[in-house]
Image (tube, rainbow, N blue to C red; front, top):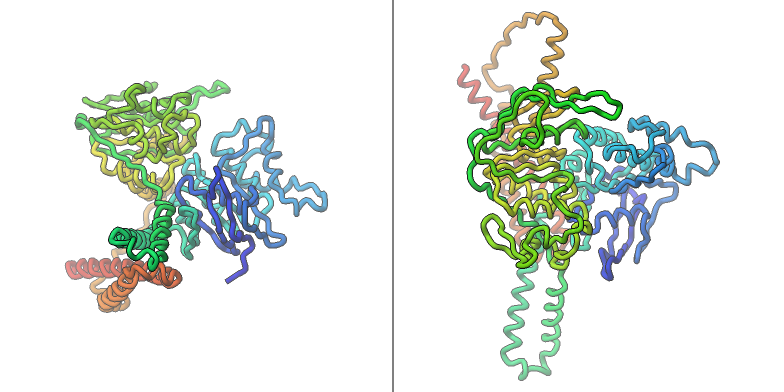
Length: 610
């Protein structure tokens, strides 16, 4: 194991009179590409700031190996009016590089050339995606050995996210990333740091292993909690049956009972999940939206006209789930507004179906009054009640479903974070029945657990869904078709999710390239059909049933070990090893099972053709 180049030892940070986290120790080694995960509010960004040296620790130590440079991409880029892009990126040059007093402007020029931003531009003229690129340039300008990234994909379009992925794949140093973009983390990480209720857990695999690993840990904790609850109940019952007669002899046992009660009271309960449900209400007509040859243009600042939609037609039927994608500024929201009748097309027509009850989540949160309290945003001010899909609920109880505390009910909307505002808007939206749900960037600033719940809720929604999103995983898990708003007003629709869109677009582009070459296709001699499996395929077909049986036995034994409620408490290292081995065996089993299925299908086809 290599020595860490950056480390924290027993780190403690306090917030609001209590510890946000305490006794956190970690080490970053060369080659590590770490996903730092945890719930919103768990302290991830604060921990990243502590690792970066951006804040002082309230306890413990931070160690950085001599000569190691650290780059840090903050969650919210700093925009200083009047400052140029060149000046901003220059701030990221490490002091170690400035010792000889030489002009290091060439470093800034090189990195700006890489991110594609003009150094003479002023920060206030940048779009959100451009500002993110400038912040990345500032973090990269000193060619850091460790790069810390806090929500690097926030508010970026898919094209920019893919560009960023490529940049980070080529980065030679160590990485630590906070992100709610699952696909981004899966593609880039090989280690896991999980900050959960003030405790940091680590795992030797990347983010793709997180779900199974975290579930195993939480299941073990639940067993321990139930065991402790049972002991407390037994000891309480004992204490009621004659404690007086045995007081002198059993004071130690009673003190132990009180300690257990205190432990139970102080044990930080797992943070709840938002309870997201939505009712589709009364059915709409079979055809929800029919757009025919629609086009839309806008005049830009220099007076020229830009066409964002050109001759696009689509038909959305009841129950469809349509994802809309494209670069920032391409015209996604414009298209969405035209489809739901909020904006007229320049040419073409849009016909809305009958009996539509829409509910609309707007990206700018315009339906939220920043000076209004959460209470007044949702409920009747006098009664404190609201109607949630036909059921009368108290506003505080309903706010708790969306992870808000009771004390926040009277706070103004403007006091909320971006993620909290999104949750409030979802609470307002989901309180009403609808049969057409329209969501413009609903996933921004939401933590993974809330994203999962939103995804599950939408998957069970019986109405029609239109959603703009840059989250590839979210789209893959949810939508039935993708509308891509591309350059020069070209808009196309593809069946399936984001991955299906990529595959279909690739085929379309390849077909187009072949047709443009205008080269006559060579005469292909028909291939002789295979009559039997190859030697390797036949060997695999023969041996895989035994392999699967062996793996089943191994998995059963490992699961039996995991079922021991004392294993985690008595031997956490063994628990971790057993859990990692179990995960590996399950992956082997799935791969072998898939291979066997492929071979059985191939054998059936060969038999049928022979």
